[in-house]
Length: 139
Image 1 (cartoon, rainbow, N blue to C red):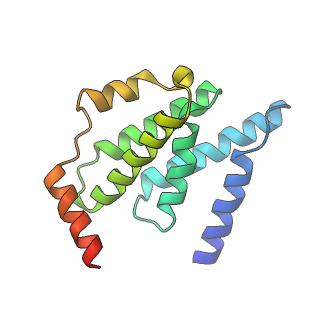
Image 2: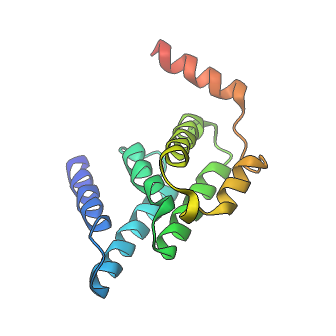
Image 3: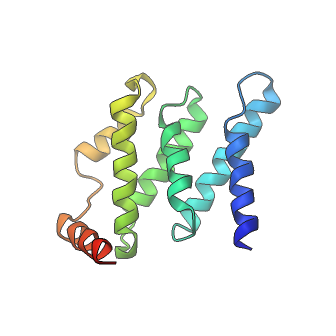
């Protein structure tokens, strides 16, 4: 089952990278991103979640507004969750966002997500985050 899941994710990733052109390709790309978004929102504890998140975060600056909106909404929802088991994943999400903000132009970046992060609407408890990091190092 895990192998089939991995293959499904690989197919979605290929579809999410389909070059722009025909309308069918655009719909396919959007559908793949929507599938990634729904999968990670509904099952954030699944295997390969970091791979999915890296794919999604890189789309925060996509030219297609529909893709940017879907990804931004998903990331906001994940970061707002009050689930202590997701703390390490939230930190990984924030690290990925930091990479994107440092390496990509901001002209397509949704300002609401940046505002959300800056205004501390999305909180990550530093004490808990450090405890998770220490626990991971021990493991």
